[in-house]
Length: 231
Image 1 (cartoon, rainbow, N blue to C red):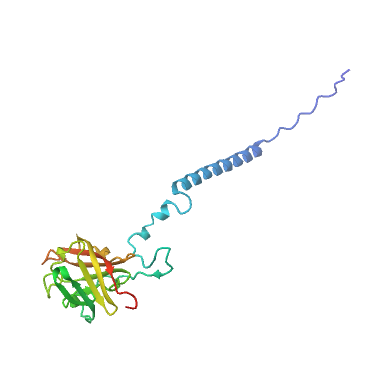
Image 2: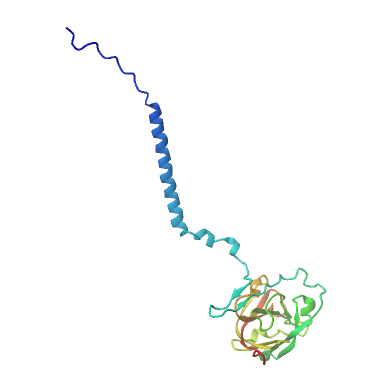
């Protein structure tokens, strides 16, 4: 007697392909997330976090001239730096010649009028103030150009100036005395000598050597005396 009964019917085979596919998809997503996390971590580390490396190296910041600045924190006064004009496209342009003050350099016996502009039309009359730079005694860098060998050669001997010599600029607001701090010879395309920076400074320049336009002789000074307010 067969007490075990008929043999059980075979169970249908399971199709594991969908399950394996799901596992592969989930595994791929997990690997992608891990790799993404690693890349982000490396970038943050290399960039120093928010505001890091690349922003600090932005080429857009190179060569720009500050248009304003502030005094130290102890003061509540805000002073703006002026913006120098570009060199004239036509230095021989027939422009009006306007006297704005005077310049004196006792060391080389110079005492003459100061005019506005750096066109040759102006410089042939006398030293010219670079438009857009600080005015005499003004906040920033007052820039003045002049001839060395022609038209009364006012800057003929500026290469004799040494630290401590004085330069006096004057206009309707008063007389401002600067002390020479140094000098250098630069190429004609070194226009950063007109850059405006915090402080009260003066820059004189002329062709160099005398009789040649190959270089520029530049003299720097800083303000040491100004009219007292209300005086």
